[in-house]
Amino acid sequence: MWVTAHPLVRRPATLHDYVVTFLPQHPSKGTERERPSLAVARSARVLAAAGIEAPRAEAEQLTAYVLDVPRGRLALADGLTPDQRDRLDALVARRAAREPLQHLTGFAGFRHLELAVGPGVFVPRPETELLAGWGVEQGRRLGSPLVVDLCSGSGAIALAVAQELPGARVVAVERSPEALAWLRRNVADRAAAGDTPVEVVAADVTDPELLADLVGRVDVLLCNPPYVPRSVVVPPEVAGYDPDEAVFGGADGLDVIRPVVARAAELLRPGGVLGVEHDDTHGTAVPALLAGDGRYERVEEHRDLVGRSRFATASRRADGRHVEPDPAWQTGSS
Ligand SMILES: C[S@@+](CC[C@H](N)C(=O)[O-])C[C@H]1O[C@@H](n2cnc3c(N)ncnc32)[C@H](O)[C@@H]1O
Image (cartoon, rainbow, N blue to C red; front, side, top):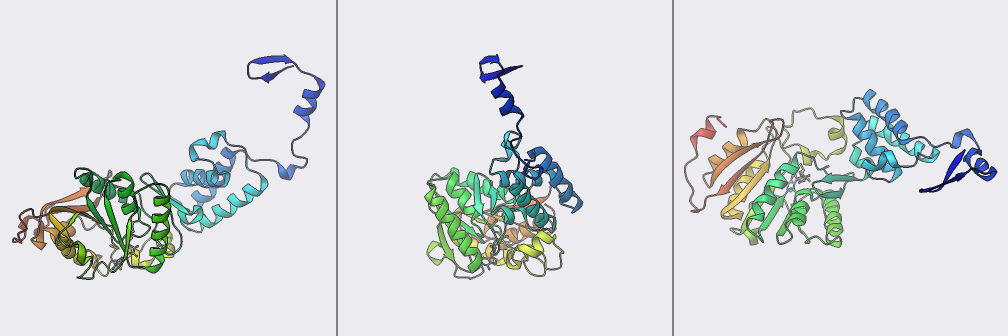
């Protein structure tokens, strides 16, 4: 037998090599390591049986979390120790009971960020990355824009803009004390990491006096409000863990969007832009609200990659005028 003493040098094996090679590393069977691929397959089966939509992806994320390696390095990672196996099994059981993955790991990925999340704050969703990206594009044209994020939650949109547009002044508004605690923590973490600090304002976005000092000055106003109509039955991860006030927007889902559309028209400078995420059933209703306000132009509806209506945008009329509503939106054509 030949052994590799150095990656590039081979020599004949000695008794010492056999001893090292063949003595078991772990004296008893119960202490053997489990290959990551086996742990992933085992976990994915449990998650699939529980009805989790992407069981393999989530099994990989949980296994990588337990091993403390990036998901892309799983194949190269050491096997799981018995303790790590136990931890993984416990996490998989909680996920199978529909606790959100992000509550288990303590963070949510959003664009280029990892945000701390947990009880009391809405877990940012991948679809909101579209609205944040649109806001970044709008702001980039201006160099050092004033950007406002209403209903900020964990700070996902505000912090993404602050990271991607270092010259921007970003103001994040949130009402819930629990969410504000997470928001302030994420803002502090990102500032410590070198991003432009986001300004946090504790306020109700439906207040007609909201951000009175910014009236007529905002370049980009973004908002992902609670917008699910009250009667909609949401998945267990949402019902049990996202705060109600982050999810439901009253009987028709528009309770927060209506006052936001009205106040945004006062906060935006002429030519400033607004982007509002909404329920996928509101692809006509929200553009109609914007067109019906009379102070916006260039009203547009935006869809995601699978064609679902996701967010609406508009510009504050450059001439500052208040005009009659555009009838096209009121007839429901979008
Ligand atoms: C759908 S979550 C969005 C959170 C974050 N912007 C995101 O995209 O992940 C809505 C947020 O709005 C907050 N909210 C609800 N009603 C509000 C109000 N009237 N004023 C201020 N914040 C409000 C909730 O607490 C929640 O954090």
